[in-house]
Length: 141
Length: 413
Image (cartoon, rainbow over all chains, first blue to last red; front, side):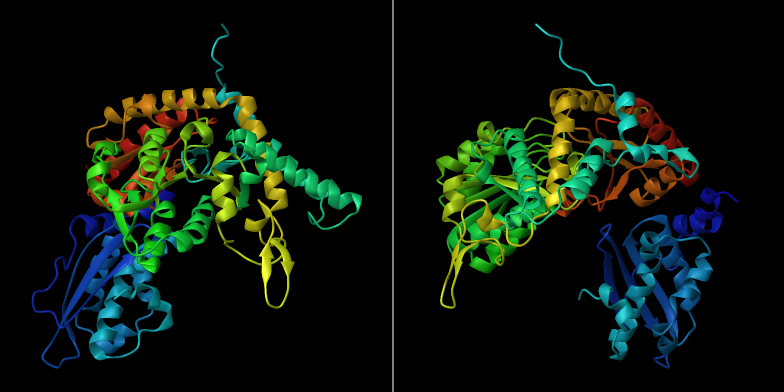
């Protein structure tokens, strides 16, 4: 497969054009926004918990960014729905990167994990737990 | 009458070792010179020669080698002076880049001269390097920070200067010469004349002008002019600030330490003469030598020929981009700009445009270009920017246009 076909896989373009979980939830339990200072891209992620206050019932996002960042955030909403907030707050980024499944340079890596970082900020903030160092750069609030 | 000098970009490319490489199996179409230019062998050789034959710390030793190094540094300063037609070499201060040059003025002049009731004025067109330091120093001193708006084509509303300033005590006005996003050149002498009528000083960011057109500090009429070396075939890590002697003499130092002193006692330190007062620590010596060699190179090619070459490339680029539906360009007409074209591809984020072009060996910049206030005015988060220099070929712009068709096909737009 050519570099081109690897990078702009059909699934990436599909998530970009038809994002899942698009739109900020009205009745969110947790919400955060973040920027990628390299390119000025922005994303807002909102989460609603199920009745147990722990399970992620719904995730919505809104933002502007490249196909990689928008597709990755769209995939993220599918990846975390139904999982416990505490698990997602500590989710290793590799799990999302496996899902995205394309080779990423260090610059594009920042695009790919922007949504995940913002989601982590939202979850840690709502649970009152400290954001791990690795993700600190995203918490601009 | 002699015919105006022209340049042969294809022949000049042989001077640039970077073009010997291939990227993704393709020859490099480097369309990002506004971010930083590529380097001619003549400049690289001058730096190597300096390290191999003349290297020692300057202004210190009395041995022959140190004298030789000092002479090389001071020769470089003289070369920079002549390049911008400055009245005196001691008005040329070596710094890391234009950003540091502007910070030098913002701190050393600004902290001393600004306070509540004063106004600091910049434009919406500024690179963050000529925006953030002024905003920061204004906050620090209690001065007011105001911004002159710009049209989407890069035209500054100079006739609104009076209204914007009102009765306020304008102390400093900082404007760029050539926009790094839109490529347009501003009428610096007109701005500087207005600034001086108001009794203020004018700081000119010429980082994006000096590589592409003749910069004459006396003709511009500014009080300070900032230049970066790396955008004009010089090495990274060096640039210079030109400033008027009387202002520089009245200013306290910016960075303090070795070399910049006259006398150090426990109770008091006095400052050295210009330019040394502003050059604390060991100087970027080899970088200065490289910058002088870069200036020699540009002068041999001819600044006027470079400017003309870029006008032609911009005209070609605007023609080619206009053929592609869904592509929007910003900026003034070709004859009024340096080799910079910012554009948008409808429905595709600039990062994706740049990524797909890269796979064909075409390097452009995607992002906010350190101009977020201007991005806000244009109503975008980022743009694509193709920028050209003396080694750019029209065929490379054709490869850009072909690449954009591929981008549109990929995204189905």
